[in-house]
Length: 263
Image (cartoon, rainbow, N blue to C red; front, side, top):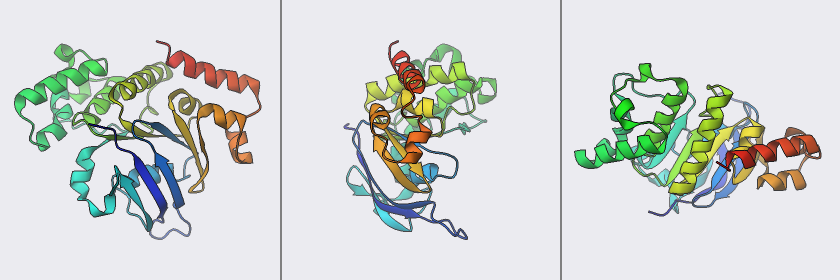
């Protein structure tokens, strides 16, 4: 199955009672298989934009196309089953085992038991967890990093063509976070899943992204490959955010990117 491109056309969102737009007239194209990081401070609109893709946030104007289909014309339940979604809080079902958590969407889609069992084992190995040790565990017996790995496995279990990740590694320590970042880059490269990843962490953005989209005040400040932001920051805000022109920061960010991808 080919990865699904995502297109935002004039997307605008304003929450009820708010005097300003959370997202205003955003147009953006994400190519199939691309890992795009939405980077910006809290309240910039990046999570709102992400959650509009699976219709957790309704649009006031514009449209979003996933693989050419207008999501506003799709059944929201079916849409959400076809798109992986990972959040910081993980959201594992505490009354289920790890295997049952990973199997949720394939079960809803009617996969047979043998297919599900094989997929669970495949995915646990993919995220670095031994199925023999982790299949029967409950979420309460997992560390934060292990729970996030299970969350990623659950999100990609039904082979989604797009994956949404909302600051998924923000609650784990730096060592675990680096490990999870490395696994994500490897998994996305292997599966070629179109991925939107939200973060406020500049270092994380540079480590992960094929392309970084800087968002501020609900609008796009700049979209480009990591090195392009350093070479040609489009606004004073982007220049300040990524410390463009500072060779120390440049070497730090780019070295972190190289190290993450070298193992």
